[in-house]
Structures are given as C-alpha cells and as structure tokens.
Length: 310
Length: 307
Image 1 (spheres, each protein chain N blue to C red):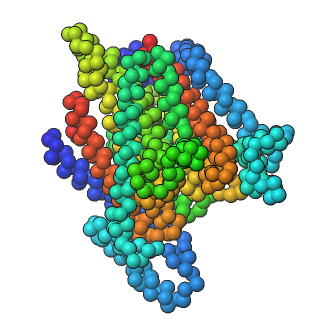
Image 2: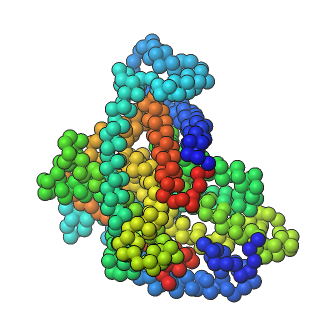
Image 3: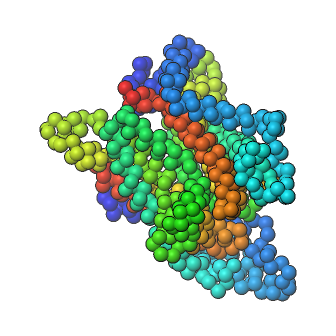
C-alpha cells in the first residue's frame, strides 16, 4: 500500500500531485506547473489558438457576415476556381466552397466532441468501477474490454451503418462505442493506484458511499491522463467520421462533414482540384493542431515527459 | 512456458473469440432490414422463393446459424449473393494476395523509413533536426490517407504525368497506393522509435557499453536499438489492423481489386455471404498476426515471459 510520499514510479507522481485536492495546496502547484510548461510550448499554444478560432468560426457560422449559405445552389455559375467573390471557389452546383467548409467543420467538430463525450462517460465509469471494485468484478469487466479490443470493430461499424440507419445519431453511438476501451484501461490503472490513499480512507471514514467515493473523490484525481487522452480522442474520432463519410457511410446529404466534402471533391479531382484541397487542408490542419495540443498537454501533465525534457 | 504450449494455448483461445465475432456478425447481418434480393424486388414471387430456397434463407434462423457455423469452420461460406456463380472462398483467394501485397509493402516501407528517422531524432535529441523530424512526423500522422491519396494523384499523375493515377497493373501502379497507405505509419513509427530509444539510451547498460569503449554506432545500433524498437514491435499489431482499414480507402481511391473494395461493395449490396466471409477472414488473419507479434516480442526482449 503506497505511503506518502510515494516513490516517483511511472505515472505515479501525477496521482501524487493531483491527490487530495481539498486538503492540500500541492495540487494547485501541479496544475499551475503544468500550465506554465504548456504555455512555454509554443507549438501547443499556437495549436490551441488555431483550434479556438476554428471553434468560434464553426459556432458563429450562421451569423458570420458575408458568409454565403452552404446549400444555395447556382447552377448557372457552376464550378469556378477561387475568385474575389468566392474565396475558395464553388462546386458543380455553384455552392460556395468556403461556406461548405465552414459548415462542414461544424459537423465534423460536433461529431468529434459528442462521440468523445460518449466514450468519456462510458470509459471513465467502466474503468473507475472495475479498478475500485477489484477482484472478480475487475477481472470480468476488463476481460470484456480485452475481447472488444480484439474485434475488427471498424467492420462492425461499417455493417451497423450500412444495414441500419445512416443517421448522425448512429454515428455518435458507433464511434463512441468503440473509443471508450482505451479510456477504461487508463482510468482503471489510475484508480488502482489511488484507491488505497489516505484521502479515500478519510472519505470512507466520514461515511461516503462507494458511488460518492468513486465519482466525487477518485475520478477527479484521474483528470490529468484523462484530459490528455481526451484531446487525442477528438481527432481520432473526427478522422474516423471522415473515413466513414469518405466511404459514403457517414454524414448524409444535405449535411456535409469535411470527410463528405473530400469524398465529393475526389470524384471531380481532375477538373476542380480546389474541391479536395480546401476541405482536405481544413481537416488536416485541425487534426494536426489537436495532435500537437495533445502532445503538449502530455508533456505538461505527464511526469515521464518531464523527465525526458530534464 | 515453452513456445509450443504457448502457441497451442493461444490458438485455443482464438476459437471462442472467432465464435463471438461470427455470431455477432451473423445476427447483425440477419437483423438488418431488407433482404439481399431487395434490388431485384420486381422478380416474381415464385422465383424469389426459389432463390431463398437455394440459399437456405427459408429455413428457421437457428438452423441457418448452425449451418453457417459448421460450414464456416471448414472455410466454406457458400456462393456470393451478388455473383452467384462465384464462391466467397474463391473471391477471397483472389483478392487477398492483392491486399497483402499493398499492405505488406506499406508496412515494410513504414518500418524501413520510420525506424531510422526515429533513431536519428533520438540520438540528436532536442536538436533542430529532431524538432523538424518530429513536426514532419506529426504532420504525416495528421493528414488522412483519403486526403493524401487524391493530392498525390493530382500532383504526380494528373499534373506531372509520371505515374498512373489508378488501377493495379505493372510495378509503377503500385507506387501511389503504397505511398498513400504508408505515410501515416512512417510518421507514427518514427515517433514510437524516438520515444523508445530515448528511454533506453538513458539506462545503465548503455552507459556500461559506452564505458567499455564500444563505438557509438554499435552502442546505438546494436545495444539500444534492440530494446528501443520494442514499442514499434508491439505497435505492429494495431498497425496492421489500421493498414487493413486504410487499405479499404486506398483500394477505393485507386481501384485496386483487393479485399477492402470487396468489403465495402459487399456491404452496400447486402451480399451477406461475402460480408460474413470477409469479416471472419479479416478477424482470423488479425488474430494470427497478433500471435506472431507476441512471439517476436519475446525473442527481442528476454525480460518478457510468454504467458
């Protein structure tokens, strides 16, 4: 049973610093420390700013002055290369590419965030309960995770989407359902090392029930790795949604995500290359920034990264 | 535990896993609304009944399930619904070598390029070379293959005319699909190698190797690389799974006649027998491959025991 101070084993100083938040001033210093290190990482800061801009534009799209309606067709105009009026050109139906990319981002980001939330809720609860209960329950719950890991899930997702409905709701479920496994493993590992610490004993002594102990006292202390992994899950899900949309299984018209736009553009690649290039660029840049931010957060929050830099 | 016992145990564990996959897929496919002959709705009822009978679809579900399992165990998935004159087995036998070639080259190139990049970045840690290599690698990870593919086609095939834009005929036609598929893995393997090497290079036995006067190339290339490459080895399992998933896209972009293209088409055509056969084939292939990787892992790292 770990005693204070814990030896600085792999991944442990996280639980150490993030420990008894209400009893100790140390956790603040961990977050402040992490924040300082993150701010020094210029690539991560620029990525975060870029993502913030993307998010603001995506949310504010309907009220942006000068932004065309993404569904308004202009068959007489047809596909034109970028001009002063249509900065990113138009597609075969005369729809403004810039507007389509902005509204595509709305859908891609929404799918990424909602499906991540689904996977977060399932993964954290599953991992926390398994780790806290331990013994047979833990073994059984993690065996389920192992089996699901070994399934070629992408094929099951394809089948699910082809045979049932291709609604956005189904997409959330399908993508969220396959992404929670790693989260469950991470949280379980954290909980295993946390559950015998004094602040948990204290909570129990004060008469807190298992549910309260897990979700009020233990889960908040697993935040560090959870934040890092969540940052990396969002781009993974956006990528998978785009992949499915590229195959024609994801977001259905008249809605369009970045994946749909790339897919549509790829069909007329030789004639109107801008229809692939701009949505592809938006998608790639966003994924790039999410990955950079995730890396930066890991360096800032993960003690192993700290050692590496030192 | 010796290798034979280990292999036997793992092969035995594969059976229930495959059974779960087979059962899930079977019921998923059969719960789907709309039959496989929906496209031919206007055929006379008698002909339809005849078709259902030929494929055994008129029998109760549990009988179909048992018959599916017993036949699948003998690798017999029956004829394709869409192409009745062809056996699913034949389609797989024909398309698999194509996918294997595509995926195999992609992985091989990813390792041959990614590992040296990662090693150099680790040895020159925090140099501008390191930063440049890792930023490029992160960019490589972030560009999806279905964006990269069309862009490469646009640049190399449609503008410069140096490579064929599609199809799978002749060695030149291999370049673009393999490049498209491998880029992300080159990048990811470079990152993994760097991380693994950094961890190993700080360890005592490396200091010992240096202390006894070994040249740096030998310290890095022999002593450090052997353990530093372990994260890459354990990534090969998931990497293969992702290469297979990626090949679905790449095969559609470049009209490569591999398994991935068949899978997507079969799913859209509701070609039940072909879908079931393909999913089970993919799953067994992945499971066997993961087993091989586990064995390779223990060969590289003597600290790991077979369990």
